[in-house]
Image 1 (cartoon, rainbow, N blue to C red):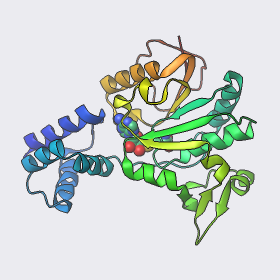
Image 2 (cartoon, protein in one colour):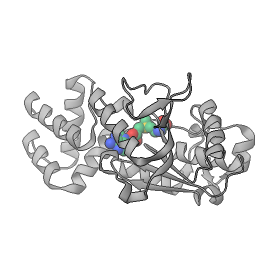
Image 3 (spheres, rainbow, N blue to C red):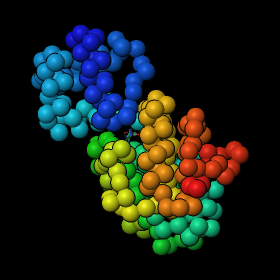
Length: 254
Ligand SMILES: C[S@@+](CC[C@H](N)C(=O)[O-])C[C@H]1O[C@@H](n2cnc3c(N)ncnc32)[C@H](O)[C@@H]1O
């Protein structure tokens, strides 16, 4: 596979997903070659044509390239603040994007429920179809649960066969999942949101991608709505937002 062709594949991938890869080209090249071999596609040019023409293959390629790490109750302090904020705003619709396999979205539902909120919906969205299916199933290995406080583990989860845990129905009912690309999302899909939680998405983007994402979040939030980013997601500019907390990356739409 020539470097030029690998660059063309990466550029096409970026144009579709916003994702840029900063790992060594030789590592990416090997990864892409393995994907092509697993699908019986011979050569880089054929792979490029195939992912452009075959939607399903492109989705498998996205799933293959976007492997993520996530777990329940990541950034606990922010999670508690989020529940306070949701209660103050009487939030009904919360977007959790990217949700990966659902750990963050369910954690939000559990915290809001514990805060006494009942009339809300957490909508989890990710570009990766495989993780969305896992999120819908809601079955987790204990290694995803190590940060969950003991009382919450006992109250919100049930132990099922083997070592696995499942999330209780009352939280499942408050949380739904969809495979979508942030950049293809519009108000026509779900209306506007009171709160958007987006953590560890910007690790995939360059500054241009981050700015495009900020614009998209702005358009998806209602006036006065809140955007919560992760602690390492700090974008250079935040037009249309004012930062409302000095420590956390919390922004109000103005
Ligand atoms: C590291 S996970 C973050 C999960 C969770 N928010 C957390 O912080 O634990 C990053 C996810 O971003 C998703 N992603 C990347 N680009 C995306 C896009 N354009 N639209 C939606 N999801 C995207 C990937 O599929 C991946 O599952």
